Length: 113
Image (cartoon, rainbow, N blue to C red; front, side, top):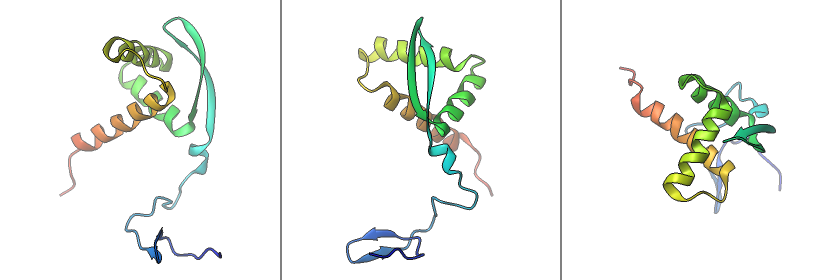
């Protein structure tokens, strides 16, 4: 099967035209590259593997909270244990925390008139 230049999403029977191209001009595939970092979570060293975009978002959240990324992640780890008894996939939780942060920012941003 050959690939066309259509920016549609594959549906049964053909392509569906989409309105917002996720690969907008200037899209940086480097942000999708996984990056492992050694972090301390509540005094314990561990390695966390996340895509670069999530490290960028974590850095922003840490800056807003005037703390380090390790301190932010320690807080997330501690709170998930206290509130929910832990989580099986900490990396997945961190990704969700990042997305929720971005969505909350969109919800509180003023809409252009």
